[in-house]
Amino acid sequence: MTQIYITLNNGTKIPQFGMGVFMVPEGEETKQACLSALKLGYRHIDTAHAYQNERSVGAAVRESGIPRDEIWVTSKLWPSEYGEGKTMAGIDKMLERLDIGYIDLLLLHQQVGDYMGAWKDMEKAVAQGKVKAIGLSNFESERLEEVCEAATIKPAVLQVECHPYYQQDALKKRLAPYGTVIESWYPIGHGDPGLINQPIFTELAKKYGKTNVQIILRWHIQEGNIIFPKSTNPQHIRDNFDIFDFTLNDAEMQQIKELDNGKRFYTSTLEEQERKFSAWAPED
Ligand SMILES: NC(=O)c1ccc[n+]([C@@H]2O[C@H](COP(=O)([O-])OP(=O)(O)OC[C@H]3O[C@@H](n4cnc5c(N)ncnc54)[C@H](OP(=O)(O)O)[C@@H]3O)[C@@H](O)[C@H]2O)c1
Image (tube, rainbow, N blue to C red; front, side):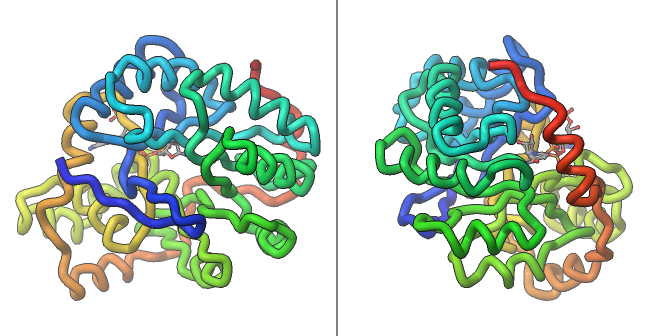
């Protein structure tokens, strides 16, 4: 199937479409989901230390038989691993868990803790060849600009909640000076039926002979968002990737633009994030 790429601000090319494995249990479930996706032509997997399934992602990459440099793997450091020196140790442990030689894209998962110290180590890890690209996740406060302004290597991506109800136009403007692109988490609202069954998606699905989810995913692609919908259902894994043989026209893109109503599926204040994300640490 078709694979399309976005050139990041460091010159590397990331597959714009992939699969996420949030909440997929470590072991056979993660490994088989990744293997079936890779077999279909997926070349991008999004995991995190916090998901506790990096070992299974790495096993799938190794077992797939696909050359390592054709697969893009993103993972994320948890705040318990932030800090100069400490973060490098965290990266080395991540490399051991994944066991795939290097990490294509490494993100700071949350905007709390010693994220400035962590960024310095991530820049060193790029220089040492352990990591190809670095970026942020969930940095939507002024801490985004704090990191971007101080960084020698500007964040390649910012991974945030983004879907037709919450399209992140203001954030995209803030990112433009750094050449940072948006990665959408909850691209289909974590499977929310209210979003998926919006009449405009049903209408367009009928017109193009696609499913409502395929229309939403196609919209993300045309918006320039990097996406990795999660699925462990073989039919969904197949359908989600089958979105490269049609194009929504400008009027249809505009109709979807009008669904933006500021609704988020996950909200919390910076204080809540400080409290919650500092109180837990993933196992090695
Ligand atoms: N950085 C962060 O803080 C953060 C937070 C959340 C997520 N993420 C990343 O973003 C990825 C995607 O987010 P997400 O997994 O939470 O939500 P999502 O991809 O928006 O939705 C996943 C849900 O939709 C269902 N689904 C998938 N394809 C479908 C289809 N074709 N038709 C109907 N239902 C379908 C899945 O069920 P089935 O498995 O049954 O198909 C699952 O319940 C994650 O896996 C993770 O990699 C990052």
